[in-house]
Image (cartoon, rainbow, N blue to C red; front, top):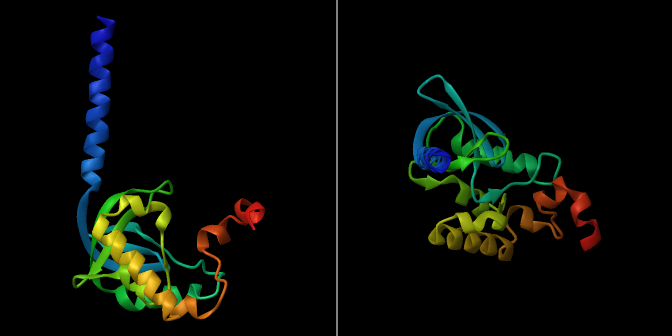
Length: 172
């Protein structure tokens, strides 16, 4: 009897996890009402639901880093006040929706990389479809070679190292 109850509870748990993952693999459409930095926006969905969206696949310079303000301004120029489609995948530990953002069919995440104002976030690249992963990696490589944006200045510190310098002290 207890084994039947345990099996049923496990099955319900699996079903709930599956439902939540399925629910997050969707698209949402809304108007961008805020740009926090070069990789985070706020989207107004259905005219009243405010959703914080972290652009997936990229990591932009922090506000206090060189090119942080330029990255934010570039993203704002692309999306602020515009209707966007967010291809959502999941939420991060801060409760933000992770998603690929499109404006009139243009991948804004990829545009940030092309402009040399974001890194391809390789730590999470395995979560990207192979085609996008290759496009983002190629765009970063090209921006580096052409010394575009932040790549015009040598020795840039990636934002994940800037945020956690204690993790990289022993590696230098």
